[in-house]
Length: 213
Image (cartoon, rainbow, N blue to C red):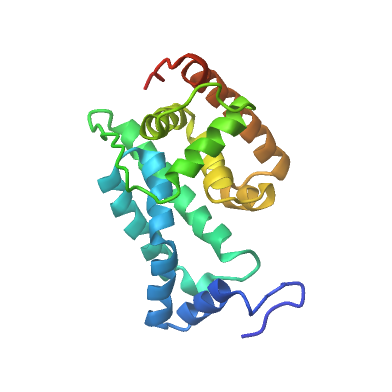
């Protein structure tokens, strides 16, 4: 396969190499990509839609879309950027469907095993949104629950941006590509998200007031 010389294809990037193998209908390469990323996609989707069972179905949809689109894959960006672009689209489509059918209620579950890094994610998010270390000792499980409620209260785009930035560690440029925005737009979106999270979490951080769901 020939690529334009402007494409910076790093063949040492195993994700890119795996996806190019998937493009050649290598089933084992596709299985390897799923093993690497299905839990991360599931965690992100659970935060977006608020329901683990629905998130599991949507995760399958994400990887089905990746497989169907394999022939159109171009290694012009990181594989994860392409992956989370598709994940973002699937999440937003699911939320739009929910809004069109308000009688369908998705339960919000806080399972401790939703993702391994949730404790650190919650701590980092509290620090990023408040700008200060809490003056009182916070219960770890309760903290995760309060952060989950605060994140759930954000709008769809703010929620996706903050999760990609804080949980996935993506740069403004990569988030912009995934969400079809400009980097400056992402920066503004994250600024508004942090302000909203600060407002939601301030009472809990300082006085222990529960975050309203």
